[in-house]
Amino acid sequence: MENLLKLEPNPSLLSNQTLPVVNSYNEWDPLKEVIVGRVEGAAVPHLEPALLTNSYPNNLGFFQKYAGQPFPQELVEIAAKELNDFCHILEAFGVTVRRPDIIDFSKTYKTLDFEASGFYAAMPRDVLIVVGNEIIEAPMAWRSRFFEYRAYRSLMLEYFRRGAKWTTAPKPSMSDEFYDFEFAQKPVEERYALTKKGHFVIRDTEPSFDAADIVRFGRDLFVQRSHVTNNIGITWLKRHLGDTFRVHVVNFPDYNPMHIDASLVPLRPGLALINPARPCLEKELFKKAGWDLVDAAPSTLPDNWPMYMCSSWVCMNILSLDPETIVVEKQEEPMQKLLKDLGFKVIPVDLRHLYTFGGSFHCVTCDVRREGKLEEYGFSDPLEEEG
Ligand code: DAV
Image (cartoon, rainbow, N blue to C red; front, top):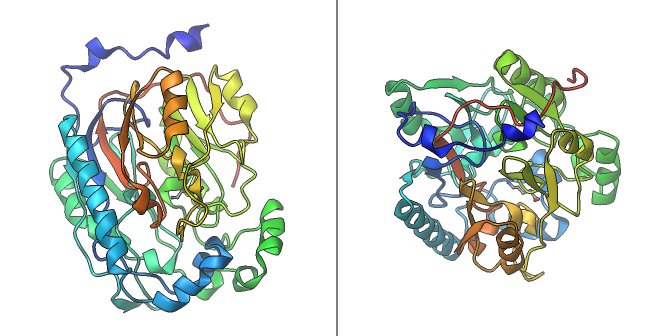
């Protein structure tokens, strides 16, 4: 099959190539430069509608207690150490590591539409996406994340001065009309039932997306509608990227959706992980393109581990150093075994305390530069225009 022939990377063509300052087309090509987030300065957001929707009911007490204050210091210290150690490991593999500025996110701010305090710069994946040679700042949908881009501005300016194409997608006003307050107040089961029918906490009044709702497979990008990504945001992305890229909307039986990178994770051309608890509804699309979808292994995390922002499926939120080498959390032995059985070299790294802040290796990074160029991996045009 012609499609499958295209799946082989050709290292000899790539090794001596001079890469543009920003260059990343997929999640697996050899990694050269990466931004790794920080927890220093992290603050606990107020229970705004979108956060209320995405947090789990047993965590409400934590948010009520700490809203507007710095994250408890002992949590910050241990997670900051894990991140620093992760950076050193990346450097040992020859990857250039960049970090955002340290900002005090507990400061309050006021726009013409709302008042809030901030969150953190721990998850560059949520704010930034590199599509080819362009770096895009995502609009974001939480009031507490409105100014998060500022932690990355000195890096963005540097990349821009060095020749990068830098875009900021329009930010929603985050005014009261943008959110469905009634939805956010409903009991969790009612919200899930409504989300199953296509109802989300943000409305379609203004474009919005988090970069982490998008996953890159070369020319083809997959995006999910979520509590932070709306249809008009997806339309903005499609129109902005034009014909060079194809944006496909995919769906998962995830009724509290926020970010696609614990649901669909490509590992190398022709192979992706999916989440067995919320299997992709468009499996056929991948099969037709010659891709195998493999179920991720569940996390080993104890049930009582504090998880304020995400599920334990972040065990599949890995970072690929190249199509053969993957960073996996040190205590996620079943995930490690699965990947080894699939032929990967696994690098186990501690990051469990970072889970408490809402993510793992993919979330805490933004790959600014990978070797490689624009390729197709067997997919066809999206069937119908959405949004
Ligand atoms: O499964 O809870 C994880 C991604 C967080 N940025 C989840 C989504």
